[in-house]
Image (cartoon, rainbow, N blue to C red; front, side):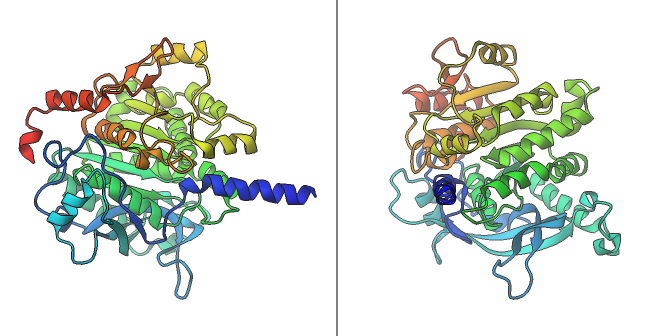
Length: 436
């Protein structure tokens, strides 16, 4: 009887946590257009097809998954941990077959889209292992005759795109639980689409498992393989021309990101924030639907996590059913859940570190409770507007039109948020409407 109960609980958990998973192995339908954009005014997409101009004809990725072999179920990479962090470029296809860029551009910005806009992974080109990620137990001969070649090639690809970008920024997306290799490629692509393909977007694909029984395994993996992400961020700072590196972590992937940042904080414990920022060049750290223990995050804060990025934004929700069930399973409150009543010590922290840390409540925004309410960064056009404009312009919460409704120092979305955001963007970039 107990076994049946446990199985039912795990099955329910898999159902509620499915918000982290991909819609299909190789394809998703493009997320709704952020409300800040419209076809006539604020439009990030140029008339010329930006995909055709990418020096690597797709989107870059880093993964510590094991490569798939001939005859295996997975097409590119297995859902298992590999020996290295591997670098490469994924080929992507946007829109229906035969669709022109002008058609794709128009459809992707529609508010009530009836036509499908699929985003597909068609192929990958692996550059090879990042030599810096090798561990002592791995035979060094497997790195090849020139172990540095993949790192040089990847850095060259990043720098080639940065050279033709308005902003010399790199964006790294780290996915959640229960997805295949292709999922972070697809989600990173659609986020990059609404950044107008400026800068460089990198999908970081850690070895999660696309199984409804994989929650415990995936959360352990996310916590245990932070070293590779830390090494990758160091590599980007040391070997590319990125002026700022932004990291977006989602769901269980925030465990991996938070631990990597704690490791960076411990390494730089005797450096000043200015020295850290100059060396690491981390701009925004954004957590969405964070499925990690609130107490563990507090420990990372004590170790200096907030000294690594210039600013951290933590998005929370009261209607995230996946996190509610995760709390039920773990008996620990999740970081991405909104406090029923913000404790005084948390308000004090938010007030003391206002320049470094923002807590943003998406509850009540349109689309934020769609499905199980866990994927609101894709389903809520207000949440996506706020996240993308943070990445694109680096504006603070008040500059983006958010407000603090009470003494809790938690930022919320007012009814006229989009109008306020557009006004702020017009002030930040007076030529914005003229450039489209």
